[in-house]
Length: 286
Image (cartoon, rainbow, N blue to C red):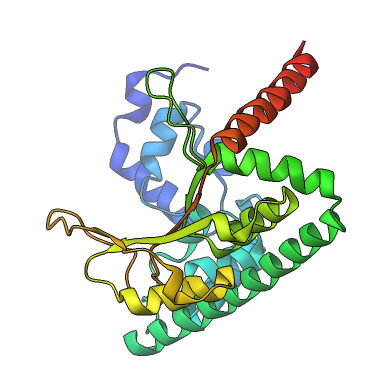
C-alpha cells in the first residue's frame, strides 16, 4: 500500500518510535504493523543499527559447532586440530574463531624439530619394515631355479650388461662389467653352468683414482672367490672437478670387469641365444 510523502515527513520521530519498539523486542513485521510503515526500504532505515531480538533469529545447525570451535580455540587448539575434531572445513573454523586471541605455541622450536624428527624416524622405520616384507615375499616367489631358468637369466643379464660387437666392429669377446656383487655372482654361476673354465677368466677393477684400490681388490676377490693376485692392473677413472661424485665412502669398490679368454665362440652363442629369446617374445606380441 502506497503512502503519501507527508506520512513520512517526520522521519526522526518515526525512527525514535521504531528504535524503542525494536529494543522492546519487536520484530520488523510487528514494527511495520504498529507504525503502519509498509515500505521495506524505509522500515529498514528506521531500525538501522539496531540488532534484531534473539527470538527472531532462525536456529542455525552450525551454532553448536561454532560454540564448540570457540571453546576449543580458547583452550589453545590449532585450526588443524579443531577442523579434525569437528569434521568441518578450515574456512568455517577461521570464520568462527578469528576474533579470538591466537594460542601460545605448545612447543618451542627445538621441541617441534625433535617431534618432527621423531615422527620421521617412525615413518621411515615403518617404511623399512614394509620394504623388507615386500622383498622377502618377492624372494620367496622365485623359489628354486632350474638350470634352464638360470641359463635364460644369464643370457638376458649378459645382453644387458656385457660388451657387444657392432656390425662395423666385430670384436667377439665376452666381457662383463658391473658394480653390483649380486649381479657378479649370478654371472659367475652362469659361466659355471656353461662349463667355462675358471682358468679362462680375467679380472680387473675399474675404479676412481682417489679410491682404495687394494681394498677394492680384496672386496671383489671375496665376491668372486679368487685370490687378489689374479687381478690385472686396475683401470683408474680420472677425477672431473666439475662433477659432484656420489659413489664415495667405504661402500664404494668400483666395478669388476670379467673377461673370458678365447671367447669368440662363446660370444657368438650368446648372440644366438639372445636372438632366440627375442624371436619368442616377438611371437607373443603378435
